Image: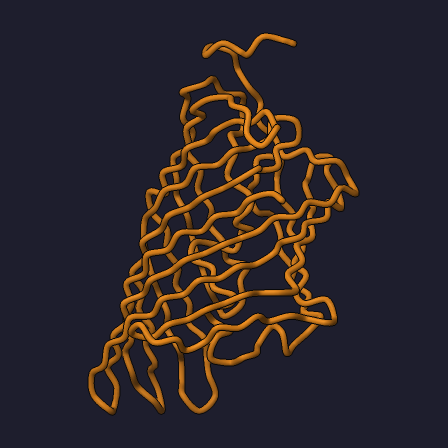
Length: 275
């Protein structure tokens, strides 16, 4: 058995899973959101609590130079409470493939391209009231499994910064994430030799302006901060587990035939673990 690298040894972290390999993960998200609404009917406020479980399947299409992976989501378990009262507790299951998203990433995890193929429209949009919570993403369009790796070799204790600007999402949406990452240690987790990476999400945000028939333009924006801890397998770069904690402030405003202003303060924990 080779000795563990010393703290001064440089380690090159890269996403290099074998082409054709398949990976299965379980995502679990818990969210508490304090909402307020100002419209024609006056003011109102609501506390929304959401728990969500999503099996995630990844297939590696290409690994050399550029990592191309397909992510398939075809079932979601979701429970929603409004002011402590159960509103939804259901499982959404697709019988025709669900949603398949193809990501092209650099070896360090930077998003290069994203395409979404909806195999099952009913699964993607139903039930209507829960679809937003069933598919919410709080920081960017990069798949949440992948954390930013350094562009060059790093030593234990060394930091690197990463910034993601995404303008590829629909609805004229722009989002960004800025974070500082630290390689804390090399450890054994679930039988895999891993790099433990601590992530400070220094800032994240988004802005979108989407025309909506009969209403006008829906303007949404948000910003926040957070933290994460990731265990990344040294041999392949594929995470064994990632846990994120986020706090986000957001507003949604309609300007046009209908006018309203909604705001929300959201705290969320998202964990992804390899099966």
